Each structure stands twice: as structure tokens, then as C-alpha cells.
Image (tube, helix red, strand yellow):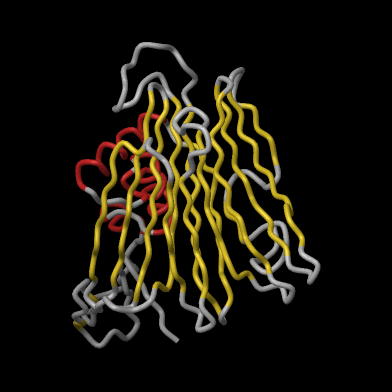
Length: 300
């Protein structure tokens, strides 16, 4: 898909390619497009990648815009969200991300929208002093709702933002936690995650998705986020199950570990046995012995 300093798109990870059109049954579709929508005389330009969910005649648009300078460097990134049902005419959620010459990022959230049902904020400081700020915006209507996540990371409490993660979850269903479940509709659930950082003084942009989710899993996650004020991708049961299965492919369970690696057979009355416990203890001189462990880490 190209890299973050060329027109058209950024680094992309997902099951659907850009551009594409996918029909989701009779009444729903998803459309992925990229385009250059403005060019200046000095060779700089603006381009965008857009994800559009259309369900029963109404559309939700998520747009990622870039301003690309004549030298090919990206100077400005913005994320815009508009839902034809949830938003009144002209209303949008907008996140602007700009970069300083030093490589630091500044983030500004703007909205002229009145459709936000609730917001949550969270600040977390890790053991090394790194700070993660998270802002959550939930909107909802009769059969439609969504969650917008804006998360920034800093090396310390008073430092500049070093990386930004934005996630958008979209649900169109027979009913949501915010509304009455009276009418029949098409069930659709998707997510898009955009990660923005800097590398060698340039924007480093990765887009993950759109990825499809069971509606029930996203509605469960919305309830948990609202209750706890905390967001992480694994709060979606669907995503958590996928990660658990992927983890099992590389790290077997305790029972699998005990049966899956046979002990080396002993011959005669060999007494020089050695073992390494999980806590790092070593017994025996280990000459000609077998080493059994669940995790192995190699360092250069």
C-alpha cells in the first residue's frame, strides 16, 4: 500500500484492501477509497483515505486526511467522523494532529456536535513515568451507536506527546444499550484503528482495519468502557478470543507443555540429572541432560 511519505495511503494492516467495495447482505455495504483532493502550485497536496459504512440508506464516514509537503513529508494529519443519522447537518467529530520540527506531536480535538451521549477520560502513569491519556466519546441513536477513542502517550508527565492512537467502533443493530429495541435492522459491527507516531522526524502512520466484529461483542465492550472509564482492544470479547487463540499457537498451556515435550530416555543407571525450574534455579551439572521449559527468551 506504500509508505507514509507517498500519496494515496499509509502503512495498512487489515483483511480489506484499499480501495474496495464489499456488499454485506442486501441492505449494507462498506466502501474503502483513497484520493488526492487538493493540489497546490508548489507541489504539495492533501489526500485522504475514507471508510464508509452504508446501512439501510444511511452512511457513517470516517476520513483520514494528510497534508503532504513538496518534499514528500507529512506535516498535518486529521481524522473526521460524520454519521448521517447520529449527527445533525454539518456536525463532525474532528481530531487534528500536527508535528513539530523536533518530531514531537500535538493533538487537538474539535467538535461542533451535540450528539455525544457520554464522554470518559483516563490518565495512567506507568512504573517508568510514562503517561497515557485516554479520551472516550460515545454517541448513539435508535439503532445505531459508536465509540471514538483518542489516546496519547508521553515519556513523562510534562513532556510532549510522542504517539497517538485513535480507534472508531461502529454498530448498526436491532438495538443498543442506549435505545429501544423495537425495529428490525441489519446487524453490522466494524472497527478501524489509526496509530500515529514519528520516526526520523517524519510522521509514521499505520491504519488497522476495517475489521468486522459481532455486534453483541462491541455492545458488551461499550458497556464495559462506560462502566470502567477504561479502554483497551481486548475488552471486546471477539478480539480477546482471537488473541487467546493466536497465543496458544505459540505458547502451549501447562497441560500441553507437560505432555508435548517428552523426556529424553535414560539408559542404565544414569544419576547425573539436571533441571531448570521456572524460577531460574539450576540443579545438576547439565552434561548430556534435557532442558524442559515453557518460555524461552534469546538475547543478542
